[in-house]
Length: 304
Image 1 (cartoon, rainbow, N blue to C red):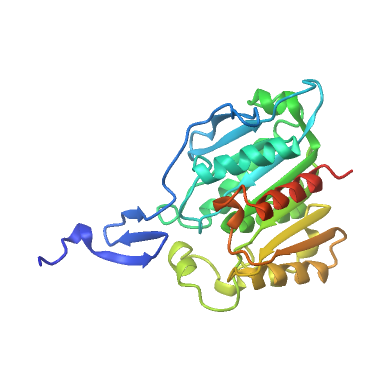
Image 2 (cartoon, rainbow, N blue to C red; image 1 turned 30 degrees about the horizontal axis):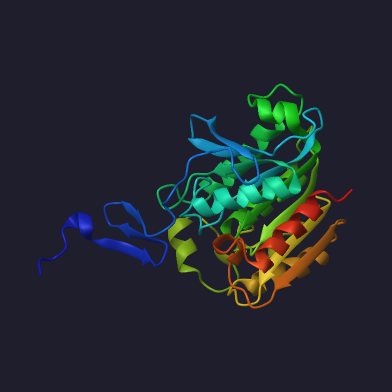
């Protein structure tokens, strides 16, 4: 067998997510399939793709539920997808299905963002893009933003931020930064973290590769448990989901406990799904436990 050519020499491999070659090229091993925006035949939810920043390439897919009263303002959801900061996108079939379901059940206007992904764009690029997306959303609070669906239908007193896995880590960052810095015209009513990734105190080879400037387990972006400003979280309610068989389960529970002890004045809930693994609701959205999870989130977002 011929030795590998320079272009084929592997620098780092993290199955089943991606392979990084010595010439800087990345090969994603899953999570590359996409579906177009649509009017969903089951729910009537409309979606379209938009660009938030031509300079950085920050983009999103926006969702609008079927409107019974076009004059009634709806809660707004900023959603951040998972995939180890490396794979998947808002255009992935699993996320498109999930956002259609969430949008319909909760009757929210939703924006699912396409942040710059590692390893081509190492962290903290995804954190920067998530915050930029939130600021872009906030610019619509006066009714004069660039996106008509937000201007016409979103209630900026009822804003929610949610994400799964790595996206939950990014969602926490957005809400934490909002609490520390403050953003005018927007009230974050709640945050939903599905099976959050976060880091623990053990070495993490993936983060060492995709976040070379990070501070390891002391980096508050990925390890919020030690954050002295955790009590400044800019939301009134937090809902954390964990799954019994998920190897990340303890990180979700640790976040829950740290938030309760932080002096934060809001209400945090945690729900553990028995017998299920990481982001099971994305891969089997019609199963009874996934349907129940979406109903719980919808109720959380419509709580007065």
